[in-house]
Image (cartoon, rainbow, N blue to C red; front, side):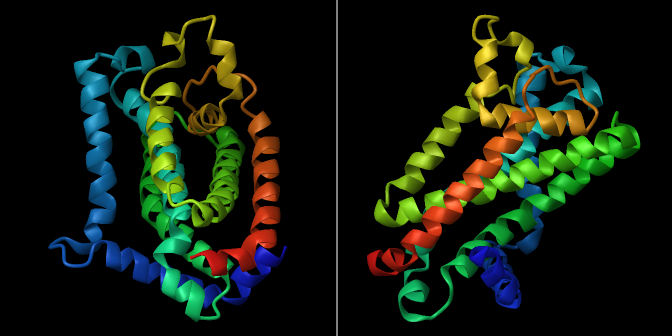
Amino acid sequence: MGFFREVWQHRQLVTTMAARAIKARYAGSVLGLAWAILEPLLQFALYLLVFGVFLGLRGLAGGGLSFSLWLLAGLSPFLLLQEGWVRAAGVFRSHAGLVKHVPVPLSVILASELAAVLARHAVILTLLVAVAGFSGPMRLTTLPILAAALAVTLAFLLGGSLLLAVAGTYLPDVAPVTSTLMGFALYLTPILYPEKLVPASVRPLLVLNPLAGVVTLFRRGLGLDAELSGAYLNLAGAAALVYAGLVLFRQRQSAVRDLV
């Protein structure tokens, strides 16, 4: 529990560093922090246009608002994990001066980077839940599933980030490789298309895809149709990933400071 203890003890520093990271991302732009909302919304709009209108997939996922919620429920957790993992893979090299010359716990540096990513995506997730709750199919009975989806997503984010942060220190190529693999994963996971389009012979293998399980839990939590069975196996997988990440992070902290 040392990682969480350090983050809690330095929570004010984590918050300050996260706020600086968010401001630095949009520094100099005319709209400033408004891009934190506009950027993902424009990205969502592009996917809606291409897959919903041009490729005509709206009817396969309910059409209209149902399709929009269905698509965003898949994209939101995926894009959160994608950005968080890619940023984590290069976090210590991008903060090399801080790592080598300032006695700041490495857990604080990583936590502040993840907090900045979470803050940016939390706005979109909140809007998605609000729309699904007020004008969509989400009900009180689906809230426990949505809570489980959030817990699993955060666990995957933390566990994967711990492993990638250490690996990225040893090998700079980890960050671009992670970004490339997540690009493939976007199309190998039923996020932009319904699962029913996957060939029946291949569909059982989706149970082994943790990202598919995360997307399914989110869609079920919002009251949307999701066919994939075995999604709750992600709870055990996420816990195992966090444990492995914490163990590796604890064992390699001193080496990380020497390598950057």
